[in-house]
Image (cartoon, rainbow over the protein chains, first blue to last red):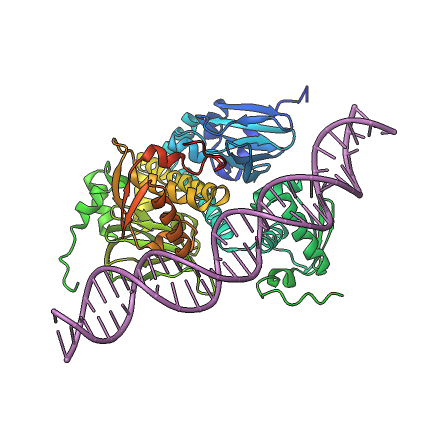
Length: 238
Length: 238
DNA sequence: CGGTTTGTTGAGCCCTATCAAGGTAGGTGG
DNA sequence: CCACCTACCTTGATAGGGCTCAACAAACCG
């Protein structure tokens, strides 16, 4: 790590979706109570239970948010990438964080104190609305998670994840790479690494994808999105 | 049911936690774009996928929010009771609802149009903050749900639910009754009714609770909260 | 090249769902 | 008051999906 040239905080803040429409003066206010944080891969930003009086924005790198159960087993809730923020809900609740935050790679963050966040809300109701929309977004994706966990099979969850990564691709085939190690992805999907490995293998054998390390080639998005919704036919592959 | 005397909308709104600190004039504005809705038991308020331009508050009765999977199986996400609201996130997102809403009993609701909600946010930043806190609250409880589903056993989920119902009881024993039918509770806990029945039976046999229909007597909250957290090997309790 | 991290493969088991019968209770009409 | 009905719940038998444990392979790295 060592010497990283300092970030232009004002510029970085201004480029975030959340802050894009704020006036120069507002940005200046926010920047004044923003700190810069650098983390090495594996370093922990805060533990579950920590009290925070601000929220974070990833500039570059990756942060994982996870539960840490007493027995040491972890469950990844979210993988946060560049230009994304996290911890807003904790700030508004004034409660300890329900999750742990850890860097998956060397990461650079901004930490914005709640006082200036509140001030911005007070001065600009459009900003308040954007904040509300942001939290609502988060809430919806969490609801999707609950739906996935409670009524989808392991294969369906993986497929859903791949389709999400594929985004709104024009073509029917696409190459993509996993945003983290398979261990982390497995946890995010609420699977063991072993099961993830087997499911990937199955999809490979069915000719739907090809796996090469973290690279995955999806050959037929349409067919992939239907797979496993129909009960699995007799594996007539020999 | 038939004839229900009309509700005093202003008074009802003013009594809600969310609106309690608003000025008379604000309440009047809100009340002006608030409708009253009556539902019979079993009636559906809106389906998954519906576009809504307002949110709901339960006056009396009970609403369940659930996923409805294509195959007809349902999964209860939330049970909403009097003085609680739902649907805010959908309003701020301007997206179709991810869940279905159905009355568990005869229910009376208020429906507040988003325009007046936005107006209130614009005029009172403290209200905006309360709204943000409310959504954050919701987000946190959803995170708790994810934690429960992904790393707790059926027994642990039920125990957690009972302890939540018990609230912060002074004494170590408490009588409580389930807020809905066991079928609904089971779904809320992501269990089948059969499994719920068996788990209740187990806890009964262990002497921790007594079940009588919807009434449950918890005999030892302390012991209940530890049950099943210790791995059940050689219980050296003799 | 050893060592360490990361991923794969196999065997077996456990938890919980599923399927299939019973019970039980509350309501309704005779 | 009883017979019946329906909704709700319980109980049993069985099976399967995903986890655990354990060994191995591969890739990465100093």
